[in-house]
Image (cartoon, rainbow, N blue to C red; front, side, top):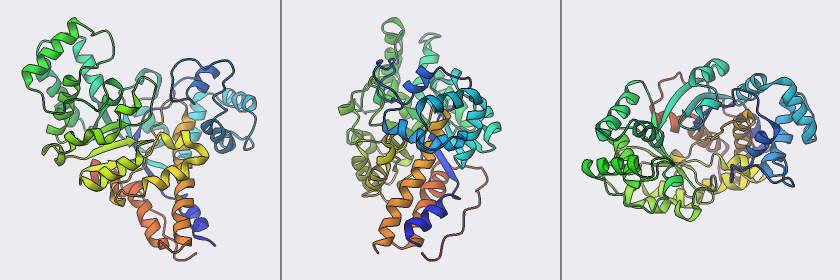
Length: 390
């Protein structure tokens, strides 16, 4: 048996902490909405000549998800959709989420919460532990709908309340709002209050995009001791990709108080190498290549390999960043397991790594690293016995 085979068999039983994820759809979506969810770059309807199934992600759905719907791999899109519609969203959610093999969901509830399962519904459906991540921009926008009076203290109370109820991290989508080339100095309370007043009397009907308000939110989370998650790299087309290179975060990462909390660089593609450098250079920086794994499909092993080039192995985590179709929750795990077995197994077969080290590194990403940095209090699941030879 090759190391690739041994790892592929072993990693099937390895439970995962999905350290950045959203809920699955609560109700059935139209086929158009489903296919559009297979395209990350635009929220506009797909052109008539474009199918969401005709992509790396679409092919991965037909290959890996079809069997869970009692279909043959590579089934035609029409047959896949017909079977999915026949089962209905609740059954589709149940099949895919339980098959993901996730012990803990670390959930960002700040986007599209009305369309997806709640934390309690996700816990009930899967039997896994569920942990909350608060989205800073969502909190700010909600508070500002009630006006700017006392904004600074109201925001601080919101973060304190989140910590009190057990939130394990804060998330910022500054990448979408302004990019990372902003003034990273901590704004004064007076500056923040002026920004809040200007926002409510000016452009307050759009997405929150004042960097002073967002940077204040990040520092407030830091002051509360929360790990900070930052979207990095590709996403919807309303971000400017050249402005979300994580090296633009250097002024923030060099700030002494920020160095005291974990900073999680999410997704990272096409900047996974820059993220790996930052994880090596700063003791509090971590990364994943979630989200991009699904969209890379058959090319996911190359992406995973790059994530393991420079980053210390205690700094790499697993995530899916799935939102909406439950296929994405399952595929994130499926493609990660496939990729790490192939990549790390080939390194073992080439004599560069030992099989035991490969298993240990995967245990770090799947369980040890996220449990340590988020201080998860859920029960540690049993890990499969490591193979002793191949």
